[in-house]
Image: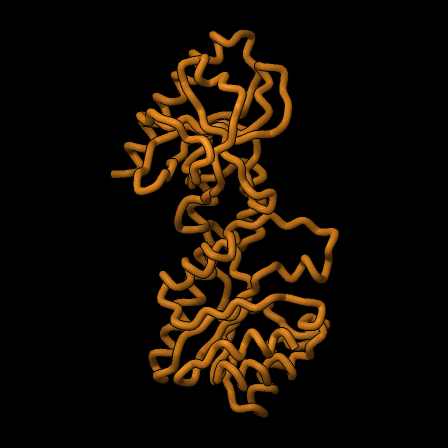
Length: 309
């Protein structure tokens, strides 16, 4: 069984307090839950741990559903470890795993991860047909010798902080809200590809960022961004869209790095989205677009100076 093989590679030295989920985005709600896991683990001299999944369960349970990722697996694991999670277990969500009963799943967690406590959200359920809800998990806990606690969701302005709400905000281009819910800017990572070099002709040479199609990209528009290139961070302005001034075409991500000179082709680039400036629009001439880009850069620099204070 693949899940047994993956779990067997972990051998915690002490009993653990765990939480289970995808944790896409590792947002503020996730962070609140993890802080509770850490407190409970510290109180009992246990190891705080997170069981996450390499792929989203919906890819198996509903293959026709496309769910953009807020974080790549490597980034998710890194963020969890930065929060102080000592044990991060990434499992492959397979059809076989989806058919495990709640009893079978928690038995494996106890056998391989020495689970003594499980912390979940109020609507959490695991196991085949979501049979392992809070009520049934507590029954299993009494039988197997582990406790179960549920904590309420985090609210911001009356709205539940969730991966779903963050994806919805991205589809509206509301990266400011996304930043509040995540506790950091949403980031896009990829490699710089060749472009038409129209930005260079306008006096604003841009890099075409090529990202994996699974990444969650905000709606078309012009954004204030920070570009991470190697060990350097550059203020930047990013256009996401089809370049309607030049007749449209495929959707691309164009980044202008303020103060950078040199060749970016095939270099890895990480882009943090800070704020949306305006929607993408068609200009009557390249000169009109050039003037607007100049205003965009000026406004972006002002915004970045205020956010960095």
